[in-house]
Image (spheres, rainbow, N blue to C red):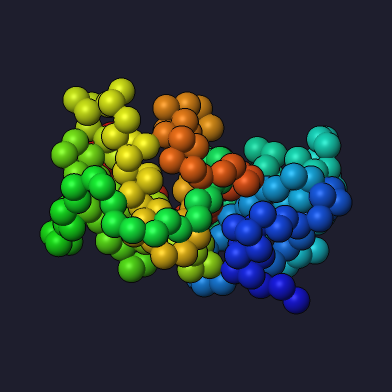
Length: 217
């Protein structure tokens, strides 16, 4: 059976699960990683809960079956059953690595107490962060060990293309496919990642064991 990481690696190469209207349940790759991934007409519920329970709840929903795994009623039931807290549904994007060194001047942040590093370590492993003039770039390993990126731009530096530059620099630092989760309503961030060459591949909701406090953005 294909593992979650193998599936994600295939998606990064634009090889998607069959658009068959199915929802499948796969085991958690680690105690931390749980949630729902949605692709075109195919959903994946990442949980160690009984698959029979998942399918029973989905059958009782009053909605189009391919959309059931991201229905609020199902997500609430899954969060309650697992004792976790549901995050927001994010757009899921992926970028291929780029050669060369970033043109953007970056200084690695060594301070483990930096708010962005503390926040990232609640959700990811092997976290590294870099400071630019007016922004921060963070890399770390999240769901199934994939490499993930987050950027933060200071208010004073917005509307100048820095978010796009940070997202592009991340592709040069990565050396492997790089994943980004962006709130669908955050059009500014979505456009920055897309302008930096990231492709929209689906949607995702993570179930956290605890809810870290995000630093101000």
